[in-house]
Image 1 (tube, rainbow, N blue to C red):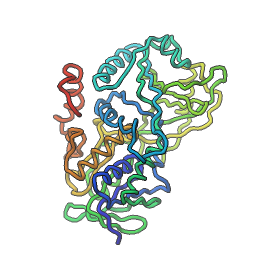
Image 2: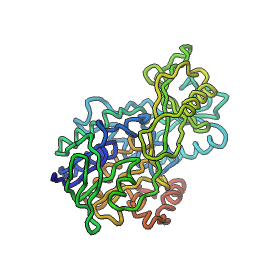
Image 3: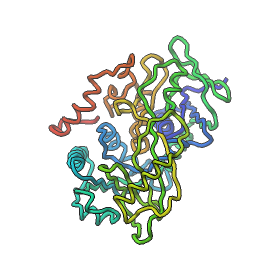
Image 4: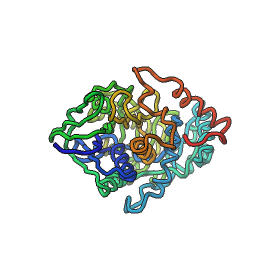
Length: 402
């Protein structure tokens, strides 16, 4: 039987980032297990690849702010090329949505997120594909931009492997051995591995993996999202436009190698799977581009794909030891924010594992224990969803950390 101190289930961005930070916290006896033939096959490899710190979910906004310095200036040797191209993010909208976006922009500025409010004319000047008649204005975030997912994922994995971690691909976990409420090992398609801790970084399959240990499920739901690559009419040259989100019509687009990458920002609940595309969603994306950005109406769709993002019921990640199974550690529910919050979440998870605590966040907000007995532990959730948010608006100087 093989032995390892910590078995990490999943070699996507969650598993890779926690492995990297564990090694840098002095824990090198790690084994990262991935059931697919390559790391990042599912959600991590199907992301839109954008650093977008502005979010309706204020906790993820804070995690993004904490992660940005790492992405702007990765540690020496992490990647040969920059992992972030800061060409900005533009959010546009109209009506009541527009007023809400302006409020969020004020909160973002107090968190250190730079933004510029644009008139409809200025927004169109920045992204000529837009139409003034459809928007009341735009908010430009100059420090956001495009991420190199491949460089980030392999930077984490390379750093972890250099520190002693082992990466095992094409190997599925089939069981978790628990004795007297404590993890003792795992069973895989290649044999058994003795370990004292298991990190559940299995994305949409997190509840399935937890069930192997007899743990109660968390309120996690996988949602499918589509992306298309479309060739527009050559009448409008595609420049180095920022990622543009129309949050009133719920779609986004950005340049991609002379074409347009776009998504209808759909979220259809699904069982964990290798997500396939739905022709109706693809048609919806093309229709949104044609109606609201007619200058880049698709002439041909060259590629399509879909991926799953796993969202928790309270829209906060689930990070920490299971309240009933000792040694079972959750790292799930990144809700589509996994790539650009991975520096912070990976470090937070590693510090909780190695030190029992972290100064980066109030762990009550992310702990699996907030769902003990299947019921929300309401005080910290209310603090997360309303109290902190109101405090940032009214007394920003008194709010430190997360």
